[in-house]
Image (cartoon, rainbow, N blue to C red; front, side):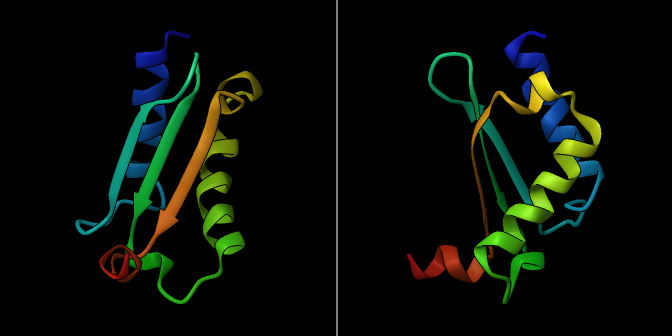
Length: 87
């Protein structure tokens, strides 16, 4: 699958899935080589630990992507708006 197609597929999975709120933001960008990076900002992460945030993101990805597709994701970050403001 071409990188642009994969980025769109990942974006659509997250935006049409758990992160479908009007305040949720999903950014899927190029990583090194043929990899993909993604950042999700959502109030759904409020009060959650890092592992819980990753689990929310990856549960969506692993449900709808083939192993060779989700294997291209080399970085995933989940943060609440408050965490972004504090940095």
